[in-house]
Amino acid sequence: MDQFIVPQVKAPVNGEVEISGAKNAVLAVMAAALLADGVSEITNVPHLKDMKTMSDVLRVIGCHINGGSHVLRIDTRGVDHLEAPYELVKTMRASFYVLGPLVARFGRCRVSLPGGCAWGPRPVDLHLKGLEALGAKITVTHGYVEATCQGRLPGGNFNFPISSVGATVNVLMAATLAKGVSVLQNAALEPEIDNLIDFLTSMGAKIQGRGTRTLTVQGVESLRPGTGVTIPDRIEAGTFLCAAAITRGRVKVTRIIPEHIASTLDAFREIGCKVNVGADWAEVDARQQELKPMSLVTLPFPGFPTDMQAPFMATLLSIPGNSLVQDTVYNDRFKHVAELERLGASIQLNGNTATIKGGLPLEGADIMGSDLRASAALVLAGLIAEGETTISRIYHLDRGYEDFEAKMAKIGATVKRFNPDARDAE
Ligand SMILES: CC(=O)N[C@H]1[C@@H](OP(=O)(O)OP(=O)(O)OC[C@H]2O[C@@H](n3ccc(=O)[nH]c3=O)[C@H](O)[C@@H]2O)O[C@H](CO)[C@@H](O)[C@@H]1O
Ligand SMILES: C=C(OP(=O)(O)O)C(=O)O
Image 1 (cartoon, rainbow, N blue to C red):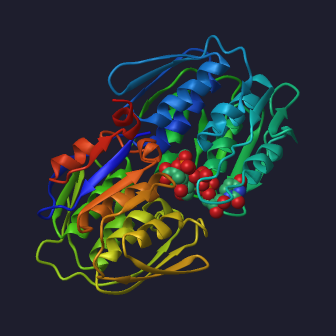
Image 2: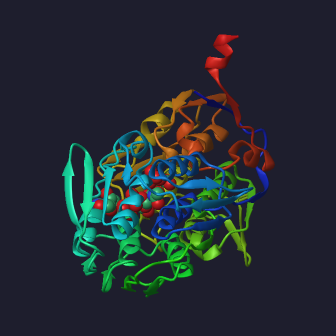
Image 3: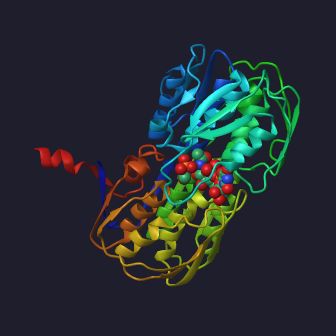
């Protein structure tokens, strides 16, 4: 299994990074391709392990997938197996997105419950309740969800009791092929939902309320294959900006949509970084700045994203004084805390709130990635830890950061990949 070696940065990072397409947007759009018969095309697709996993899920179902550089073509004409197996779904939660499209288009499917939680329980009850509200019959047996309906889904109304990106994706996709009108209330507002709505609209779906919490969907009898342009990855952008803040350097991220990272930029301003923003770029400059601690609370969009919590916590470690980090989206998303402590960090965890005593020197150590963003946080901390930090289980990070080491190199940070098993075999 690959590991990263992260030496301490010799000088504050400085440079420009071009941001890739958002993996969380592509995953939803790939599943949505199942709603039509034919070849859908998605551009600005990052080369990531998650894209391969979703491609494997779609292939099992009978799709043919090809493409070129950052382009994916999904041909659904061969769909003949309405099942997503545990072996694949367990490795990536978003595989569960095939449930809504398959039951809406084919009237039945069998999809494994997503297992192997990265940091704690991540239920799918709202996906199931929402699909039931549209008229699907759902049973859960032996770890599989079976969804059926007679003919087309009737459609219906559903009020999400809490804001859920994944449940909104699944239920929205299913509603597009329902017989009647469906009204989804308290739908998620994340930019990835808008990206999905744009793709569904290109397929002929009739959706009103884009950008609001109430989506009204007039179901149609069939959809045509779609074309989608993936939005930039707001979490990748935020992570590279953290590299600027934590090393007191400067990073400009390009090919982004600045509004998508507004809350993250506000947090950088609050700790005292200079933030410059252009039409499709943003820059964090922490050179010669005295940074100050802050209280950070994660919230659904447009609030500060839970996916940025771990990378930002690493940043706060570098700032003298006490900072607070509260995750209200995922109360238990703190697997990185124990690993950061191995580097010498002082973090007190109480429920969903961490108190960080910043400004203490960090020392390189052997540490382990537990999930995608936790792994990114460990790399960031490694940049300022004295000596060398070795991070194992970086397959988590590979799920979501394209060309990570090359992009780090562009801003002057060394992140070396190596495989200890290959070395041992020599
Ligand atoms: C592939 C993808 O896009 N993943 C993102 C997606 O995950 P995901 O879609 O899994 O996250 P949700 O928005 O659904 O989760 C938000 C909250 O709702 C709860 N919940 C969710 C569904 C459900 O059926 N029941 C329930 O109780 C969750 O436990 C959590 O507390 O949004 C999260 C929140 O922005 C991000 O951290 C993930 O990176
Ligand atoms: C947690 C993430 O992804 P997933 O929901 O697929 O685990 C993420 O992108 O940070």
